[in-house]
Picture 1 (cartoon, protein in one colour):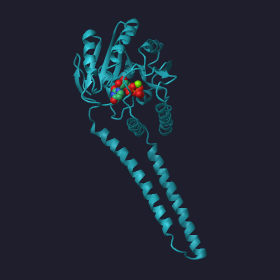
Picture 2 (cartoon, rainbow, N blue to C red):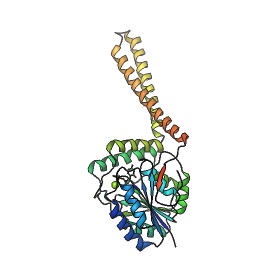
Picture 3 (cartoon, protein in one colour):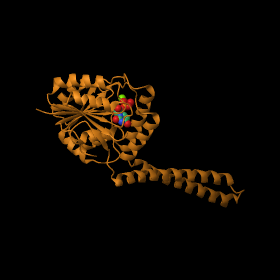
Picture 4 (cartoon, rainbow, N blue to C red):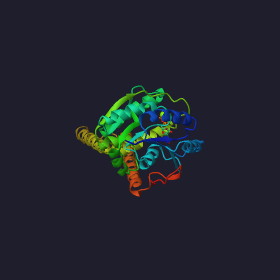
Length: 312
Ligand code: UDP
Ligand code: MG
């Protein structure tokens, strides 16, 4: 009998937890006998953790991991992945935008012979600003990485044990699970699901946080910005050479006119601007490399509801 693990990161989701628990239980009881649900409390500041503990007391198949601070959704999921023991693993958001009722769909599709089944949200129930900015981000992301990432796919998915085992070996600091799973390969497919609006609690992603995340994902997955910078360097040099030749010819033909102070200053500012941008870019990559070589743990577990847990 296949065992199913469900991993759910939670950050200040206290209000949703009772409904989440009920709906998960209703659904899972009908699909599998053998399952576990791992709630990972990503350093919530509300009473998410005490609610998770209560659930774990009521039903031993519900487990909780509590991280020592807010590490971020993908790190929380990583903690869950490291500590689950299912033959199949479902990853989903805890805010009920990913609906527990879709788990059977993912599971049955997976059993047709797919190692990865992604839930594709045909209509995303996010605000207009978020939809537009996310569309833009994925356009740029796909251009910069040369990948073909479907923006309608979020974290909601099921993966097989062998995908999980390989995923666990990938310990990079900059984590974007969608990209990591698609990098791994294995037979993958998608199913369409409905994305529910958030009924309670609120998204923890502010525009500033999304911007930082977007930057990190691009830097982690692409070195095209570096190559673009080199190209820009060449282009500016080319223009400077042509302009230089033009000045020389002009001086020879017409004699030396009044020295061109303004063009000098303008090109100076321009070139310094370009140089600083490129330096910053290189610095960013260097910084990320530094973060990787430090090899810090990806998360720190502070408390669990039961069992001994593996760290980082
Ligand atoms: N989440 C988390 N850590 C964070 C931010 C979010 O574990 O730092 C969880 C959150 O509780 C939810 C999921 O990640 O279960 C998705 O977050 P959210 O709904 O805020 O994102 P959105 O749906 O707006 O993209
Ligand atoms: Mg959400």
